[in-house]
Image 1 (cartoon, rainbow, N blue to C red):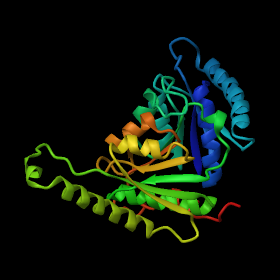
Image 2: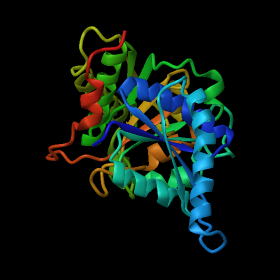
Image 3: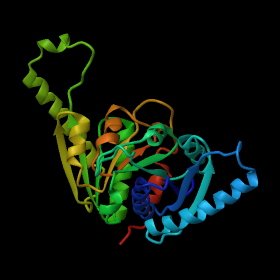
Length: 307
């Protein structure tokens, strides 16, 4: 895995949001920004030599904008020709094996909310790295630092990977940490088995179960990190989105099935990708016996704390 952090750039306002979040994450992870812009393939219209010159000119223009958006960080720019931006970015990810990919929200999203466009949705259907999504208007209100980090936990291995990453980032950045979970009772296709159970007893048992989940998660947090626990109730995605709107980053794990080392949206994270009020960071799935499950992302984050 390289130290590159790929930032998707399409020239729109959401590109500025991606650059702002990419700069903060690059600093947090000691990453090397790689700004990638995808242009249509014109093989049937323009000779290859002319296309190469056009891409060089475009790379120079994007480089100037990217350096301004990244606060002067050194940046590499790639202009790739492909009729499918998602496919081009996915191939770049496979080649570079980056720390992660940063994209902006879709144009239809509300200001201050994450809303994946077609490219982001396609990538979160199986990107081979962590994917971060910046909310609409993020560049205008970002302060350049990740000071309040939230992590959503449950009982899955993917949740434990998210917790490790959140703790490592909070420790490196001297940030506060909010650990939250949503007490939702198990639901099956049939409700008959629950009809004989007192609803109050079921609610108490559910709450106790999720309190234990929080207890286990908080055992992993060093005493020097300011931490807040939140046990939420109600709709999981709506509750998490409402509780983290004032945070600088929300970390979630990929869903607990599908190919290893892929970022896959489950039902809750898919809805968060449409409604979260702060940047969303989805980690790729890692197997419990995968030797890379702690990953370079966590290793980089555990390096010398930033002052």
